[in-house]
Length: 560
Image (cartoon, rainbow, N blue to C red; front, side, top):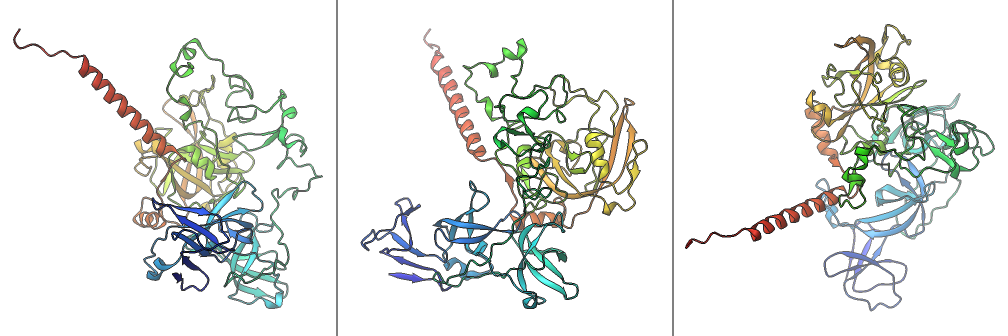
């Protein structure tokens, strides 16, 4: 018996299989397992033959759900997904929900699972200027960070068209949930407008056409292999040779040849984290790359350093190495991270780093002294900081003695308007003043700062989350100034004010948006399972202790 879905291109046939289709077999426990196709039609009655719109190996355009841009990809696998009814579309419960496993051409090791709405035939038809009209949906190349440079491929709606000289204005379709349109933007590459391709049936053939030009990985050297570049290659010599002998700093993301370091290294360190000489907290005390930590007698005798210790000390999340690196935007990106909405929550700081919202694992300010600050974390580090939600006073970094490789310490000296403090001051729309600070001429025109609130700040602020870390949106620097605290030590203070179109997570509108987007606490892969397993082990151990004590207790003889 067979069932045909009303969309015209998907069908299910029970009881037989045939060549050229994906076959799924239902096991006894209800799970579905992908099986190979057979030539005869006498398979088990539980098998289903699925005719999909796309087939394995087909070249397509696939959407990156984190940023809304389209990339060239290839279908690797097709599996059936459990159908979830859509309240807005009652008939959706009757549709077949297929999941396509696709591999992006530029990322060999990355396979994404996408629904049919997020893939389509590869666009290759370049449209002529005369074919473009207002209201038309097309594919354009745009760079949100640097509009005059080549960027990624987005869907866009044409809003204005000027013939002499040629100018094209569009609204980009960003994001992945509601396809929200951006503000009107000017498209630079007006001669590279492509038609959006569609597919109505599996047998429909779409010509590959022209190859679209891609955004270079490096905007400085344009990926020229013969050109030295200190931005994408070794930051010391600019050489691109021997990439396997280059090491990345986990703080500034700059690359270094092993022999360009001072002192040079003989091989790549085995440690999960490595910091260049400019990012070390103390050059005389911080352990160098490749060196082993010199333990004191006290630390050497700790249970965590004994090999026969049964406790798994390797699961700490404070200094764990990143398993993923955000490649959606460069590390020096100002503004929101595409695909990360306001209200997103993570359990650990390392996850915030992996998302690209705030890259340092421990430091509260991320930035570059000559560019500005990209993000900060509020964790209640200074008792005189004030947080009113929509605006807050933030204290700079430094003034602490971190010798001995300490992560934090009490302030013992004056702070200076250098390093990260100067980076944060550069976000203010005013001339840098190292002595008196400055007030922005127009605070909204300052560089944006991504703000993350940490649960540690909940001791002094009601706007901080009770657990984990939460992205609260974009803020701008209103002013910054030097301040003397109770110990008469100088601290640089910054007043930041919220400037984000998305509602704040603590407001009623923000809570509704969080619920609408389904934003819940994100945990590392395997974390909850590990916690559950540890809880079970602890429970079993307690039971054994109670049983042991009960068995060793003697009952008093009443007759004695």
